[in-house]
Amino acid sequence: MAKNTLSFVCQNCGAAYNRWQGKCESCGEWNTLAEEDTTASVPVSIRSKRKGRTFALESLSGKTQDAPRLSSGMTELDRVTGGGFVRGSVLLVGGDPGIGKSTLLTQATSLMARAGHRIVYISGEEAIAQVRLRAERLGLSDAPVQLAAETSVEDIVSTLSEGAVPRLIVIDSIQTMWTDTVESAPGTVTQVRASAQALIRFAKKTGAAIILVGHVTKDGQIAGPRVVEHMVDAVMSFEGEGSQQFRILRAVKNRFGPTDEIGVFEMTGLGLREVTNPSELFLSERDLGTPGTAVFAGIEGTRPVLVELQALVAPTSLGTPRRAVVGWDQSRLSMVLAVLEAHCGVKLSGHDVYLNVAGGLRIHEPAADMAAAAALVSSLVNAQLPTDAVYFGEISLSGVIRPVAQTPARLKEAAKLGFKRAVLPESARGGDAGGDAGLSLNAINSLTTLVAEI
Ligand code: TYD
Ligand code: MG
Image 1 (cartoon, helix red, strand yellow):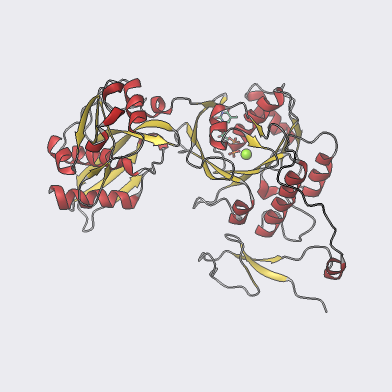
Image 2 (cartoon, rainbow, N blue to C red):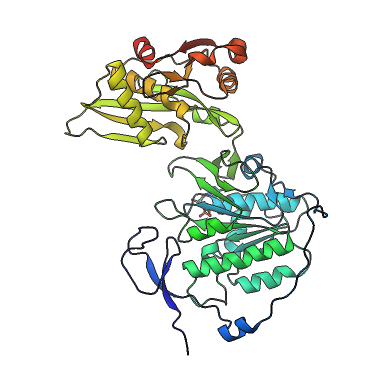
């Protein structure tokens, strides 16, 4: 008897149901269920009769292939991948449409192809002529990248199985790929998942590294198939404010490297330029001499990054004052405001509060607490902070300033960029963390002290 194999698949998380319903019980999203045929084209009777093939079991100490990583030729990209693309691994690069994913990968693939590797770029979105135009604009049309505009996974796998195994294959984008083995339309979760599976299998079998490009939906998920994120070895997200030229590549998941490193790029008329000293860039448009700004000496991955926090505290006309934050954690802001009210007598309940991290960077470190508090108080009392000072330190609920990691690296970076003093946690002053960077250190142990000094 033919089995009814139509099912309703959530386009957000991939959960399948046999009835349509308004809300996906698995991820809680509304209106994400779409009807899909989830059967494989191989009939069930054939599949179940096929006898399993035997395979050889290997020992742990066997021979490994040499040079397991392939450098992209771009330091910022290598930093995020953890030193280059790993042989046989699959990496998903997500980002908003138009952010510069194709540009980044065109640049990286060209550099690798010029270094003598076999590199294949499959575009499912653009015609060959468009890809060539981009390469021309980037001054890279002479790079021996092998190009195709294809969307059938079977065709791609057959073509790439011939000749030398490519070192790297870019699939731009996974949402445009489709495979014969499932009936659903391209772009649906089932298709994307099956296509990704086939490509991952190819990567593992041949040792080629594959980069899948994925579009991001408005809420920041890599469109539809969150499932793909679980299948691949690494997920990177390419971010940036539309109006600004900075682009940040961030590792969200990485089986072969760190997940807290960022790569910083600047989009120019001639493609992406690597920014080796992000602090200089983030501080380049500083508005010196305005109250409400403080420079935070932060750490992103292994690298110190100086960035300006901007606060605006203004009397409110609303019953519930507004609290808006860009680039930092909303609950962290609430906590800092609560500690300022409770322990330092800073009354903010009648004020709207806005906090912004300049340059489109997103800060995840609690060490930014002190810089945020300094910026907020500075805006409230309309007093400018010293322009040659950096701030860092975590604030506890009791108003104590707690020490943070990597103090020497933060101080060194500040000194390098011409800062003269640092306001930091008291306990960080001891040992060799101190003045060898040449800064005058103002070590404080409670938030009350910071507020009194502003
Ligand atoms: P693209 O790489 O096509 O974005 P994605 O693949 O993420 O959709 O980049 C598109 C944008 O980048 C487009 O607005 C034009 C801009 N751009 C530049 O500013 N300079 C350049 O050299 C290139 C190639 C693109
Ligand atoms: Mg693109």
